[in-house]
Length: 342
Image 1 (cartoon, rainbow, N blue to C red):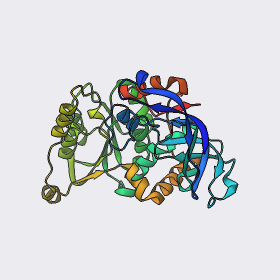
Image 2 (cartoon, helix red, strand yellow):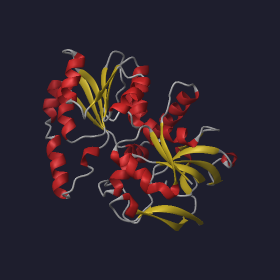
Image 3 (cartoon, rainbow, N blue to C red):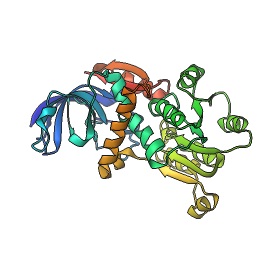
Image 4 (spheres, rainbow, N blue to C red):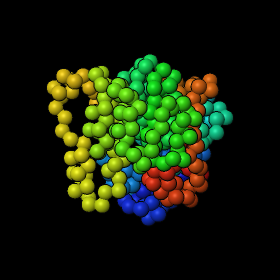
């Protein structure tokens, strides 16, 4: 048993009311686990969904959310090499990340040396999600036309670079003009502000009669049918979030409306059109295929070390500013990775 402190999500709603710092006791290590003293943890949009009571995978309140930490290993289970003690690592955790000490499996950590934590955290959930979609699940091919929603965000900014590595044409969709230069600087061929014009029409203009080969979509809702209509034969719609659901004011009615906008899809029609919808939930991959997560994490850290992958820090906050960090992420005004330090 180990005593520590953690930021608990104790009720849903606005971030200033949802969190509180509490003392907590960690269980004993299992044979294949490590104990990490955390420097910092990262925020992901799933955290916002959990705070709004919209993420089914989240533990019941009160709970400690968070998927990733940077820190030093201070203890290991009986089947783990003791030489890891003292090593600075980037690590996945299945919740529990908003804590000063975190237990996770040894397979979920990667040594990072002196990479700054605000850079390293971008290489965890977000970069691994991007790499899994673009290089493992249904790899992007040279010449593909690719649409990336939320392209200035943590996953989107990595996807731009991974898709360009494959020789694709990238259309980056963002929500403000200030983000356009950022995504073009990462290699996007085109950038469009969806708050200024209808993105479907802009994409049709860009493609000049051609079709999309892939769409990376963390928004869902009304964008799903639009993206499917833009796909050509062999096209892939990667669905890895539902941010359009956040902000609904009418509970179950808002959820039903969100689902209505997504529509009903008949598998045989997708087969006849040779179009694909690929659902991505990295928690499920981590639970059932942990070696996939391990391999992806190793690859993105290596790409960073080689200088082939840049990451954007979207802001670093003190743990006392957790509400402020959550608000920034939820408003959609941030770019890159938001981190919180102890």
